[in-house]
Every structure is written in structure tokens, then in C-alpha cells.
Length: 342
Image (cartoon, rainbow, N blue to C red; front, top):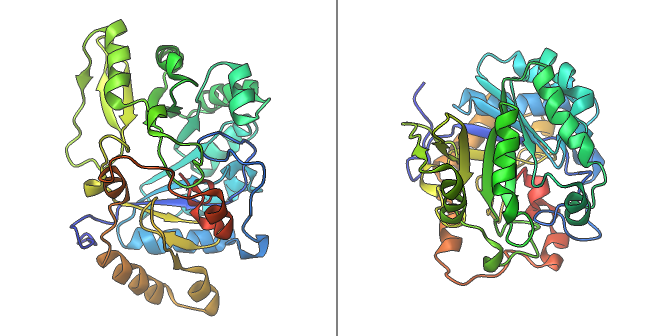
């Protein structure tokens, strides 16, 4: 297949497909407010519609699909959607990002349905911190969900931690040890000023350089693991004992020039950039009776004109504030990171 390239020569390669904007946690970097405006339930795409959208993107080259939310396991009977997607031979990689609270209940069914990879958000190993930061009293269930994923046969488990100064920057090493003990790969993420990060400040960002410094001070020099041709957002490294980990440096080292990601919200709005202001409504033509060919032509024309470089443009501002004030988020819930799939 000839790659579908955007205006900067970036292929359409991966799709983050949100299945809900609801979440059962209130993490400070994503959903710190007391109240939110939700997408109308009637507007959410059905499983068949979600699978059809994924098929259109896969037919254009986006053969990596990740199910997201909100918290995707809040969507009833999610394994049924996984089974629909797993039957599409054009989708070579099917993954899920979850906060882990409900993973213990569903890990076996997800694996049986055809899910092959899972990423769990784990910002802290301390239950009292999770309660204070995410208003989440179910930290033990998150840890249990990680173990359940391993027991269910998931061999590729990644753990994501957004590192924030003054919150969990003293857990860089404990989190790495935790992941290593379970055969999982730790991923550290710089705190980004996107969507609902209304408490973001530059001073709270713990940079890639700082994270590497902490790790190297304990474990010695690390070895970068270059992956030619990879468009994954994480830079990967290896310790002397073979342990691998990754860092996603979206703030201090944006990867816009290699970004091949698309995001479709649970109500069918397509964004070409996490920072993007405007989305394309796919639900309306889908429900109006558009054919797959017509949907494919729409996606191809929009992607071909894509010039988004949101993280680079934000970095070029120098001193910067949050992307949206609370009022701007309430005016359009699709601006929220928990709606766009993070």
C-alpha cells in the first residue's frame, strides 16, 4: 500500500479510538475540576460504527488501533468491540489504555476477544497519594488489575506515569523497580499543557533530562534503543541488567515531525493533533448513509492537508500558560484530554 502522507510527509499510521468520555478517576493533570460537561449519550458511536471508522482508517494505512477514553472499561461489554476489531485483518496492532481499576474484572475476556497489548496508568505506588491527587480510593484495584493482565497472558504490559514536580517525582526509581519486578515496561511522561490540565505550570514539568539523571545516578549510564522507522512517541532506554523503560518528552522534545496519530472521540469527532482546535465530524456522514469509499475519501483529503505541529508550536512560545481556561473547556467538551484519548 502506498502510504497516505500529510502535507509534511507524515503517514497516517495509528488511530486512538475513544469509546467514552467518562472516567472513574479525577487525576490532577487531566480532570482536576469538580464538574464536567459530558458528551450526550445519544451521540456516542455504537460498536459497529466504531469498528467501521477503524476499518476506514485501517484501509488508509492506520493499522495500529488503541482503545481509549475517558476510561474505556466503563463502556459496557467492551470485549465485544475488541472482538469486532480483532477480526479486521488490516488492524495489525490492537491495544488498550486504562487506569486499571476495572482491568481485574475484564482482563481475561479482553485477551480472549483478541486484545494483545495493554497500557495501565500508574502515577504513584502510594495509595494516599492516589487518593489526594486523583480522588481515587481504589488504588489496590489498579495494582490488582496489572497483576490480572499478566495472569491473563498479556506479555506486553506498559505502565504510564505522568511525572509532576512535588507530586510523584520522588517515585521515579520505585516505579521503575515495580515495573521491572512484573516484567512490564515503565513509561515516564512529561506533564503536558493540554486539554483539562488547568493546573499546569512550567515549573511542575519534570524533564526528560531530569528523569534520566535520576535513573543514571542510581543505575549508571543507560543505553538508548534507537528503533529505525518507529513513530512511537516514547524514546526507549536499557539499563545494564537489560531492563527497558521509555520517556515521552512531549514538552521539552516534541515529536510532531514524526507524529502519525489520529484521534476520534466517542461521538465521532476526528482530531489530527492532541492540541488541535477543530475536529472533523465523522458521525454525521456515517449516520447519513455515507459509503466506506466516501468516508475514506473524506479522511484522505483532510489528512493530505494536515500541517498540525501543536506541541512544537506550544514549545516555541517560550513562557506559556495553560492551553484552555475552565470556561473554554466547558464551552466545548471535545477540547478535554479525557474526551480525545490523551
